[in-house]
Length: 427
Image 1 (cartoon, rainbow, N blue to C red):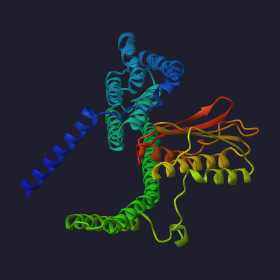
Image 2 (cartoon, rainbow, N blue to C red):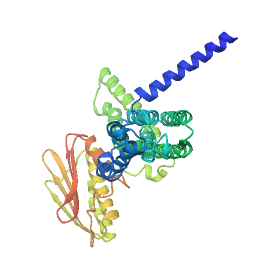
Image 3 (cartoon, rainbow, N blue to C red):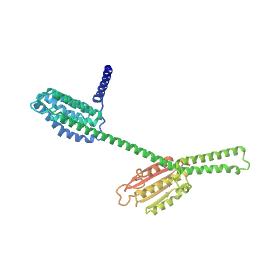
């Protein structure tokens, strides 16, 4: 039993020794916060007007009250203030420096009368400052270990002192405990704030990703009708084609039957995909069968905006012609989103809508002036990244067609959206 107890005690002592060695010798402090550079001037002022004056007092106490002489008194009295300065970068090393210095002063002192022991008054202040920085930079367990060793070392020095000395261990212990508790609390608050910022950033990224997926889903729902229309036309043409030939060959009949069967299967798969993308309560039954809008309804869209009280000017250049359904739908939605943003964020502004039919693409530009008495840039793009999905949807539609998109403020306080949709995409 005794051997077993001794073995357990030795194992526990070895574990404790390794833990203290890892914590109080090899452990690294937390990285300095990003605001460290901003606080450097304040810390320099504290060093200049607080730490060094207390250090000078400590040197005088070590020389005259503790009888260490000028050489040893200057060296041992100067270590604590220097340790406070170094504690910002090396808190554990600084703590070791002030603790060993305290023990040396207690062992070598020849007190001249009654004074605080084993710390001087300045020594308590500087030792507490080092413990405070250590509690800010290290884990709470390490700060508690340093606090315990500091108090234990002071108690040993006090018990070994002559009865003529005036022990002041309790005062130092209370000051050190309060200092470490405050430092640990501030460290915990900083960690909580850091975790909150990281979580906020993750939440914002997740929200942006979800918004992007929602916008892509909405675009896919709209394009479903366009694709379904083409597949229906293919199916009908494949069914009618044999009747347009006097004596169609058997191979032709089989190929047309296969084309129609593939078109019908594709339509069925499209319906399944649409069932995944669209919930039952997303759109009313009537709205689901409304044809997707094209640029033919541009005048109707502009009239609705004018009815809301905005001055809208339209300009169409080039030869107006029918485009592929995907380009028509995307162009209409881009103009619609831009006008909606102006209604929300720049009421009273004047809008200019430009549509250019070019040889290889369709150019769109929606620009607005600054709203009356507006002090900030607002309009077709303002607020779209925060409260709405306007700009995100425009970019996704243009990217889907392989086009180009740009937006930004214009002179005078207005805003513009510019898009170019290649005619080859979506055909």
